[in-house]
Structure formats: C-alpha cells, structure tokens
Image (cartoon, rainbow, N blue to C red; front, side, top):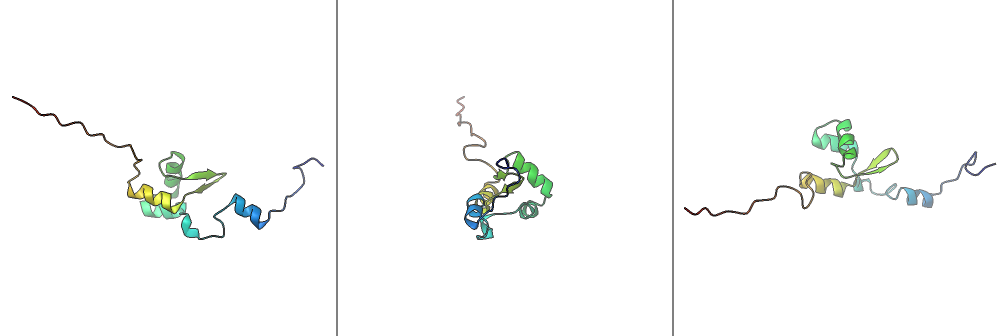
Length: 97
C-alpha cells in the first residue's frame, strides 16, 4: 500500500497537544466567534468577515479561527486601531498680522 493511502495514523495526546496546544487547557485563553458577535452586537458572519479582512486579530487554522482573549481585548480597548496608525496632528502655526 502507498503511504498515506488507507493508513490511519493514531493521534496520541502529546501529538494532539502539539497540534492544538490550547485544547484541554483553560478555555478562557480563547474567545469564541459567538462571544465576539454578542459583545459587538453583530452577527457571526460579520465577525468572520472582520477576521478575514484582518480587522479583528485572529489566526486561521484550516476552517477554524483562533482568537486569543488577550489579543481581542487589546483590540477592543484601542477601538481596533493599530499602534502608529490614526490621525497625525498638524503642527500649530502662529499667524502674524
């Protein structure tokens, strides 16, 4: 038989923890899409669109989105602005008459 065809590899707990390091740990490390949707008062599809556009910080892992609570709350506290972005103030000018 060819490798990868018809063979099922047994996944051990250590292998699974290497692939999904947050599984079976404190779930408060991550925040879910429904929880974000509730906090922003928008639908889940809106959250997914914001994730895909890079508006909300998250990592795509296959079909899943991993959003850490810390990264989301940082984003939420800064109203989604990135450091170094935003309005740049113009220097004050003194008008002489």
